[in-house]
Image 1 (tube, rainbow, N blue to C red):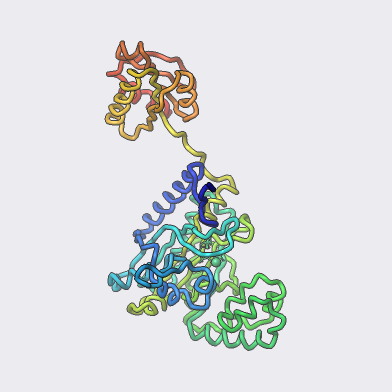
Image 2 (cartoon, helix red, strand yellow):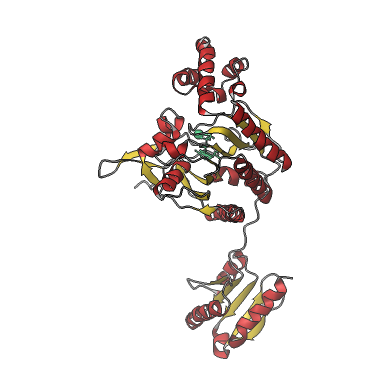
Length: 426
Ligand code: ATP
Ligand code: MG
């Protein structure tokens, strides 16, 4: 029979990598907590219309990337492709309006894309959202927070910030009309994808990968000229705060993002160390979304970062911390009586030394084979139990990284371990 394999683009994260994920997640969580963000845990499945309404009908995600299905009641459900829509849905549903909410979430997202390095069908994001505040210090905080994260992870040399303002809805509508007018006259020169977008989602043409299309765009009207006074001031306030915080950025008038809900600020942290999948974190302001999903008008902004790409980047730059050993202490017990006694001693030690990373050998075998396992575990110390030790109520105390073996009474074992590791730490 053929062995069953995982679904294409949905990867296992194996122990040799999961420690790195845990490190990344712990650093992110601590940082968000330090800035006053609180975790919100959201369902992985939502009604399909949540995403089509929030992200936009004519976006890549909604048009061709969603995992949608009918459940047994005939309702159309979708595996979440991103976290903001669900976050805003929850915000509305639980009446969280009125005070500012600083929230974060983490977990798997699903998009039916062509799998490649840094692009999966199940991938993981950490996102932060601030709801209820209109001023640009919110975006500034989201950006300095992420910049601090890159420093904590050792990635700060490899990522740069790109920044743009999309203006308000009216600015964008006027710009959109101007862009469509300009590009329609040159329709035949556009790449195929951009021709299709010209009718549905023309702003997306700005980040087309086609060189010919980019050449056409060089002389196209620029979004910046269409920004109203307030949007200009908002953007200025943001850049002032970033300058004051010493954050450098590149103004990128072509940065539009693939989700319809953004207005004013959009930003991306990008790297050139991961090939085509260069964006590790992306976000912006989305003042209309809460109302669009049926809530009270509420300004908001947020970002989401892709954890796979951050893990890859840490590995690529060799800034990943080394994996720690699997144990501090490995208990070897040879013979049936010793195995029973060793099992009990293990539990007693765990009682008196909580947090001790102790592996008690399972599965029997010779002294030699058990010692091999002890060594491979990376433990500093082996505890050895055989017939003699059993009779004398002692344990062989055997440092594995230098030092002589000695015999220790079973009653004094916990104290001896405490001493041993107190010295080890120096
Ligand atoms: P891209 O242009 O790479 O497709 P996107 O604009 O679709 O990205 P967002 O929806 O803004 O991405 O998601 C935020 C972040 O989540 C991205 O910057 C990226 O780091 C990560 N991400 C998005 N899609 C995937 C995916 N299929 N696999 C892995 N990471 C992803
Ligand atoms: Mg995408």
